[in-house]
Every structure is written in C-alpha cells, then in structure tokens.
Image (cartoon, rainbow, N blue to C red; front, side, top):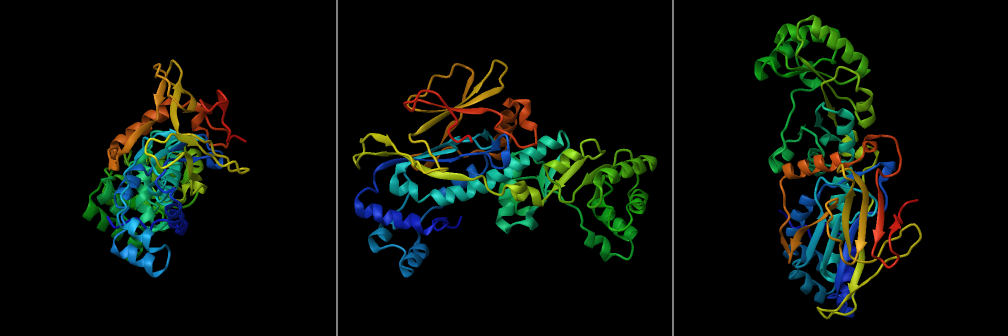
Length: 444
C-alpha cells in the first residue's frame, strides 16, 4: 500500500513542529473520534471504515518522497523532518466494532499515544470513517426498507473511483448482497454481479438479437434489461428467447411499481413464473419502501447509496479529551475539552456500554469516565482493542462485521426502522464525570 502520510492537513504538521519546539509533543494524550449528532434526523448510525483505517495506519510512513516534498515546500523545519523520518505509531487504539451501530457522542475510536503521534492521524481517520460510515448508515436504512429482498450496490460511476470501492465495502457490511465494482471484489472478496446496459441492446439490429446474444453467452439464467424500447414487447421477446427458465428481467425507468405489476402479470401468463423482477433507477430508502407492495424481487442502488442518501458525511470530529500534566511517562492524565458554543466536547477518556433490557433490546448508550462498571449481563461493552503498542490486533473479516451488524440491528427497538426524521432510537447518558449521570449534552 502506498504511503498514507500526506493524506492529512497542513496544520497537523505545523502543530507538530510547534509542539516539538515547546517540549509538549511527548505528552501522553487521548483523542476520541465521535459525532455530536446523527445527520438528517436519523435514528442510528452504522460504523464502517475501521478495517480500512487500520490498513492506512500501517502505511502511515514518511518516506523519501514525502519528506522531499515537505522540505521543498517549506511546510516544516529540519528538526521536524528528522522526527517524521522515524515516525511509527506506537500507541493504542480502541474502537466500536465495524458493523455496530452508534449514537450521538459514541466514542467510535479512542487513540492513546503521545500528542505528536496521535495528532497526525486526525485527518486520515476522519476522512475514512466519515465517508464509509455515511454510506453504511444509508445502506442499513435501505436494507431495512427492502426487507428480505436483496440489494446490489452499483454506484461506482457516481463518485470518485476509489470512493466507489470503499462504498461497496461499506454497503456490504450493512447487508448489501453484492457489488458491480470488480475492484471491490478483488480487494475485499465481495461478490460481484452484472449483465448488460442499454448500450448492448442498442448495438444490435433488433432487441431479439441482443437478447439472443446475451442468453447464448450467459445462459437462460441471466437478467435481461427490458426497458430500452417497449417493455411489454421486450418481456415477450425475452421469454421467447430464454424460455420460462429466464433468470430475471430488469426495469430501469418509469413508474416502477406500476410497471413491476404489469411485468409480473405478463411473465406469469407466459409461464415464466419463477423469473424475478429487478428494479433500478435512482433508488433510495424511501423509493424502496414505496415498492414494498410491488412484485419486486431485488433492487440495484447507485447514486443515493454512494452519496449517503443525502448525508455524504457523518459529521465526525477528532478531539483531544485528555493529556498528561508533563512529559513524564507516569504523569497522570487530566481531562481537557473545548467549550465553544455549538461545538461542545466532553473531557476525559471514555468507556462505552450499551444497556439492554431483559429481552436483549437496547435501552441506553452509556458513556463514562473513570472506572468501568462490571458487566451485569445486560450491558454490552462497545470498545474493543484495535491497536496495541503500535501493532494492529483488531483486524477482522467482512463476514464478522456483517454478522456484528445483524446482531446490533436485532438489539434495536422497532422504531429504528422508521425512515422519518426523529430522535435517536435510544438515548445517551454520561456518568463518572463529576456530575453523576446526565443526559446527552449534544441533544438539542
């Protein structure tokens, strides 16, 4: 993997230079990555990007190319360049498991190291988790609206080429069945899917010729695109060419609910009772929910998915919450926090639990400072070790993340599936900060 060290902002390095000069760079520090609210009035969010962040951390090295650029542009001085040349993250990181759900204030990542080591990671970690979590959160809502019907990711052409790969990964964690992106397939082992576009039909002299060519090449179980010309004629031709074993037809335009009913009736009349109907065309969670009563068997989702369905970022921040009183390795940590209006943060290194009732349904996000209470059987610990002493120890497969997501969603109250804007489906309480228990300070 190419060095990720310059996937950062200029001021991270100027802060480093000033801290080195002032003698504070080596103070032990704790940073936390969190969001103050759920964007768009959503009722929960879904963690994604952790695995990519761990890969990026391992590649965070200042090699000859990066150091030469920084020197040529005068970004930092020579002592700082010398420090960067030997940079290796040696601290510890904890985080919510990928695929888990989160709420306002949830400390998705806790980074403990020296100030110098940890501050450099801010922009890189935020860029990965802000994007991937936005996509996963939108994908989860789409999966909830789709019910048992499968969803396929097909939005790569609507975003940056590498964002498309990351979006496919995030969507898969949240329950999408497959992706159209082959790079995501080779990098992450995600199943890929696809057959043909309108251009293939237009290439041929007749629609029948196009269908015949596709069936000859891919077999009768393929999916034929039937809305290039007249849909009724296309369905008739598709069944005539492929027979009743035709795998599926795809509709990509028009009133999808009305057309799906007509096509289902026509397919049944033609004896293709097992042929599935797949719909595409600018779908989002609301459009999918609107098709719940239609005879649709699957959804292909593009633009809305890869752009977070109107919420392309998660609004996460990365804040220093505690730092040592000196550079002594054993110096105690003290809580620090900004008090800016509308940009509040809570000082102190946090722990996090999800409190559940006797039926296993989540009731509260409990975030605390100080000693973590012993699990009484109803609390689920949320932070897990990801990096210890600079070594990645928390890497997981996507299947583990998908299973965690299914389990986390099953814990949520039924109200979580509502698509309308509203408050988070469970509340957040803070304890151990000197005030006793308190409600979410980020709530409006």
